[in-house]
Image (cartoon, rainbow, N blue to C red; front, side, top):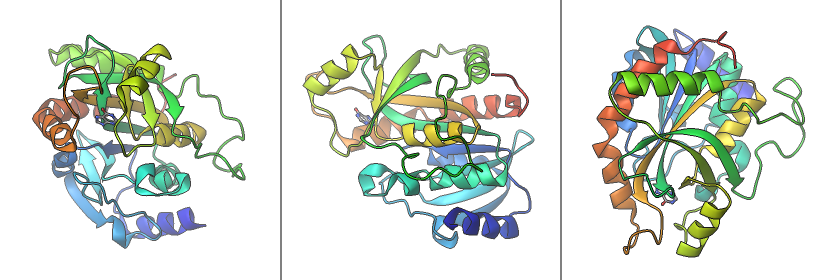
Length: 274
Ligand code: HPA
């Protein structure tokens, strides 16, 4: 019901409906300025849409065109660590799915666990570990949205992964791949937790994205997801982590990240096979 109210409001306000959703992580907010013919809607003006409280996240929906495609750029997300429920933190995905958006690009800042990563690397996420302690699909299932037990094998759309790797190569940079472990936060990890995450197959660690991917996959939206490695994970270097460093590295890589998004967006098609 709450999702329907937001969808109804947006259908009234938007001159075009978005084919593609783009969620901007820490430090990437300026990508919203690249939208042509933008309709800017503050989250506060959309019924039931959760406000964004994290530093480095703006809190607005920008709908318009990028590279000839209609996009909804989300500057700001609702993290579980802010105290939002799983339903609130995936509300935006539900709204996009119900507006007819067929593909979403999710971006985030992450700690690098894999030793070969360096701060500043843009990494293609190929899979995830849900360690947030909740699943956004728990509770009654809305059959109109998706099945009770959705498969996650192809949640990170294989065809989109191939396309993103090819695009990075064409842009002249090497893009490593990795498995993202989503934790609740908001404390950063301990060195012991990072050793544990490495042992169970994580290459990246962060506090977002996983619940959104589960909901997108539930609604059969195609997903492309990237991390910017803003720091090496806890205990890998002999220094404390801090949010300022995370934001600063994110900002430094913003131009490269934006070029990648701009190059990838026109290639995402509803019909492309998995
Ligand atoms: N851990 C968790 N989340 C993060 C990190 C990290 O090291 N860096 C950026 N987001």
